[in-house]
Length: 288
Image (cartoon, rainbow, N blue to C red; front, side, top):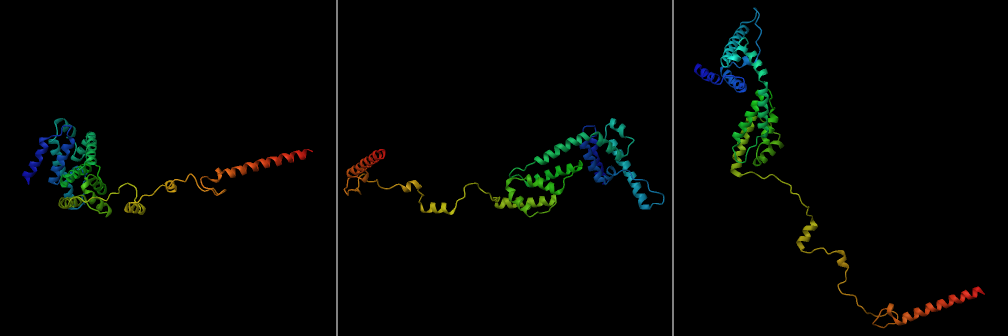
């Protein structure tokens, strides 16, 4: 156990805090403290000392916190440059971290920007393993959480589903339609199972609606019997030409129509002459 502790602490000695590597240094510090079960020291402020009448358990808990705080504080100072040591040597571990966060908040802001950008733009290429892709995305999500910007599981799952290639369209459709509630690790397990099935049977096509003119029964019928509709004007056209000469309805002779009949034209002329004469005589009588 002691050898493991010393081995982990060596990563802080190799990469000491120098002012431009705070995020990497802080990440390594958390790894070491988590292994030693002392991470709470940099997350919780110093507790108040128990009163004299406090229980033995409370007094022992307070003593352990003080001992761990001293140990972690010395570890942090030992992993800093001399300039930073001088600035923080009179602080306890919790106060050191709070002060360092304020100093290097700009770095955290930049890392948050880069991490969120990588997360939301991450796309899995067709044919690549889904396991490696999801682990990478879960790493981005966990980094944002450590920076103080956690994503709710529902949003994190949506982001992961949106990053999948088209071959997972059917999986995403079923997942959303059935409103499946899963944690991120459970989603990863489902995706791995879906990946295995896709390799066996291939991706199922998603129903697509094609744009175009709707074909009705009339169109189908027309196509089936091979007949086409004729234009109305064409239907009214006579198939044979009209005869130029026919039987005259006035004189009964053939070879001309009534409008061209000489007898009919002569009668019309006489009628007009007679009508004109009668009209002239009437005018003369009226003048007398």
